[in-house]
Length: 483
Image (cartoon, rainbow, N blue to C red; front, side, top):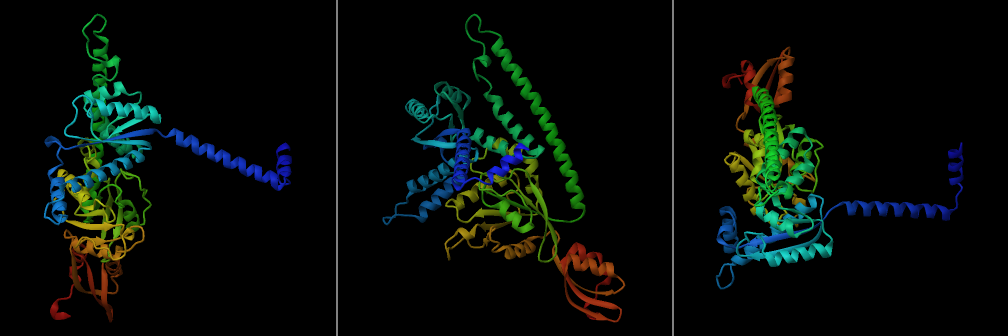
């Protein structure tokens, strides 16, 4: 009764009271946003550009830089090599910042250092480490992210100077993968990569795990703890690999059943955040999560797609690639990437509006080569053309599409149709008794029927469709002389 009375009274409140209630709601929402913001970790980002011989870019990246330098020569004919290097570093830094945001960090400061070679003790050297310590103190950051892998000794030395957590590039990517893994398979693959990364870094993680020291009271327990943790991780690694092998076995069985009926697989591959999931949804009508955050898709998705010829294919959405993708991740996600290895055709989806379009292409091709899929038939697909200025030139021979607006999708489907060779399109003329309704229905479903005419109790038609389908009904084929 009291509740009803209060509700009735509330309905008679003045406009001023309603305004007060509204202000209270706004304050509560503001406090909630502040709590959510404070829950996110403040991070200081440290990016280092090494110029020494041993830290040169990969041969692929060097070729890209040389090509860019030749294309952008000064009036006096001198190549602008430094500009190409700066552009590459700036793109890498922007990508690193997006990685940090994808992990849920709030960027408090970004520190950049250019040096000839890494400091063996701290990677960045004593002076820069002092600057990092001061920046952490002034910003109140709880996290320092390095856009470079730290050796175990470097990680220990840096952590000894900082009152907060230190994470290198590989750990950051592993954390993002762990956030986005939804299926049991994805979680196992992430855990495998994390454990393989942690194993060589166990030594010296805290005093309780240090090796035997040189004085009384320093022997035994530390080493025992270290060996115990190593044994636990090794046991867990064996179990995870067994579970992933079971996943691979199930995939092989499923693939065997699929291959018994010739349905080609087409795999979407590309750099992370190239718009693969948005394009996948537009083509198949699925509702796969499409996000601007990096690595939003970890678990492979398979959907059936009907091409203009009415041929059926399976379209696969896969995890995005990244420059300097940790090798442990490529190895751990091999079960997922088997769909890429087995696909008949790859659609290399690229962000047409990206300033590093060509560099991203080279990075993806490098990973595909590592997977043994570098020579597969591939269609280059420039996505996000809705973000390009009107009339902007794009790569010759590439298919221009927009997964968001649907522009160019019809042309893409026809290109897929033409590129598939395992079950090629053929044209046959059939004369089929009208009583064979099952045969007529099968051709209507799986092929394009043309020039259909009725003659008594028979139907003469031209069918264009996959060879596997038309061959089933060759007994009804009409020879050239009978047409």
